[in-house]
Length: 214
Image (cartoon, rainbow, N blue to C red; front, top):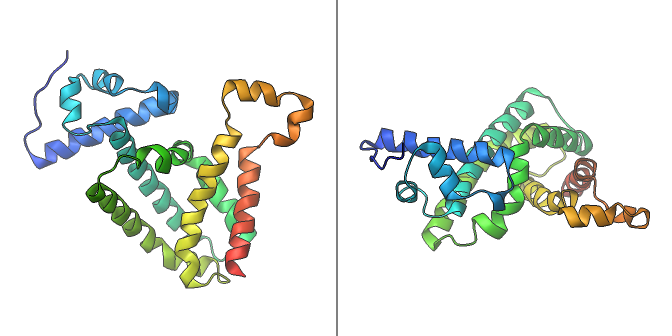
């Protein structure tokens, strides 16, 4: 049954918002971004589309909330591994980063959509709030990162985290091309144009981390 009953208390509103993000996550695990609609989310929740709009007026805003949820989980996991894992070389940190991104594959798939889609139509106020949220999540990781990678200058730690995401966002679409492109790349002569995402990512991260430690 479809309902438009409003959540009254702030706690109830937060719980409903979290449930909407949870449903979006479930759909994201099974579908490409372009195949997911707000109507599908509303239907799974048993809500009207108008009720969903009261929390997330666009698909981009809903998936930005999902991105923040997934990134928060990933950063907490990364910090835990850095704190418990001793010190690293750039290569071993690249291996760890790649392994964690594999473990958080739903986030890895979503990262390429961040700048080009999810942030595209943010208001100035929304963009500022999102970036301030991001900085507030990255900053607690910096001491653990500097401790784990002694060759890294503290002033470059934030750049390392930012560029890590940039590499994922750039390489992932090349490693997961559209079906027509996949078919074209099956031609032997085009094999050098293929990108095996995970090995390419680990190698690129190792080069990035080495460069930042220089």
